[in-house]
Structures are given as C-alpha cells and as structure tokens.
Image (cartoon, helix red, strand yellow):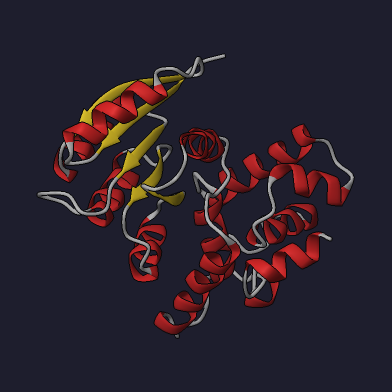
Length: 232
C-alpha cells in the first residue's frame, strides 16, 4: 500500500521536527516536506502533491485560512488537517469553510494525530457534530440567497442517506453498521459522492450538500451529547 505523503506547515521549527519524528515512526506515513510559512506551504503543495497537509493557523506571510484556500485551488485532492493552539470556533469555522478536512488542538495525543491523518486521507472529517452544526448555521446566516441548485438530482437516494449520516458525525464503520452495509460499500458510496460533488473530503461535501438541499440543519445533532444518544 502506498504511504500517506504528508507536508508539515508550522512556523515553529521544534514542532516541525518533533512531528516529523512522530510520523516517520508510522510505516504507512512519509513526511515529504516542511514549510515555515503559509506561502511556502502553498508552493510545496504545488511541487510535492502531498496527500495531507498538517497546518497551523497563525503563520507568517499567509495565515492557515489563506493558505488552505490557495492549496485547495492548486491541488484540490490534498486534505488539510489543522493542528492549532486555538479553539475559538471562529478560527475553526473559517478553516473548515476554506476547505480544511478537520482540526485538532496541539494538546492532542500522538495517537490522535496519527489517527486523524489516516481519517482525513480516507475522506473522513475530524470534527465533532457541534462544529459541523455551527458551520452549517453560519452558512445559513451568511448566505440568504437561493440555495445552489448545481448538482441537485445527481446523488442517488442511498448516497443522500449516507451523506446525511456523515453530517451527523458518523464514521464509515458506524454508517456501515446502521445501514447493514460493508465498509467497502460505504467507502465506494462516499467516493461516488465526492466525485459527483467535486469534493475531496466529508466536510466539503456536507457544506455543498447543505447548499444543494441534500442536508439540512435537522440532519445534524445540536451537540456531541445528542449524537451519543442517537448511537445508543
């Protein structure tokens, strides 16, 4: 199996070095480059075509938000995972809207970071259901125009069902168990959804699904407690 190619973007050299040592212990991961500012991150993505960028928010020249937007234009298939010290929902939502696949705080455990990289590489989002809901609520508040109809009707009923479950924060395994499908089938449906909607990750598909009417706020629990109750 091909290794996950990772680019580390952070202005602190010590953090980059520590993260490189951590990730290079994983047999399925390969750190292909490091960037000390947002501008360099965009340039290296264009050159190296990494699968995942581990990105900080506050960096010189370009912020994490600005760099994320440009990276998604330069190489849309690259997934961006934010690793930050900031937990303010405004930062988080700004990054998710820019195209990031998820976020983790720098206080996260090593195994959480490694697991999150694998998750975003496979198309899953690393964020809780409250963040997803607040993201959609912000889309509602900032966009009063008629929802975008582009792509409506392209998704099958099963694909719409899976997209709505993904919006609830359910993992591929959770979705497979709920619908009585295999993991391979769920992944195939998600891949079809991403291709049809021209997305590279769940978060982007959920936002576009909301804009196109496939997903509504009622499909997303109001908080992680609500999601946990649904799983029981």
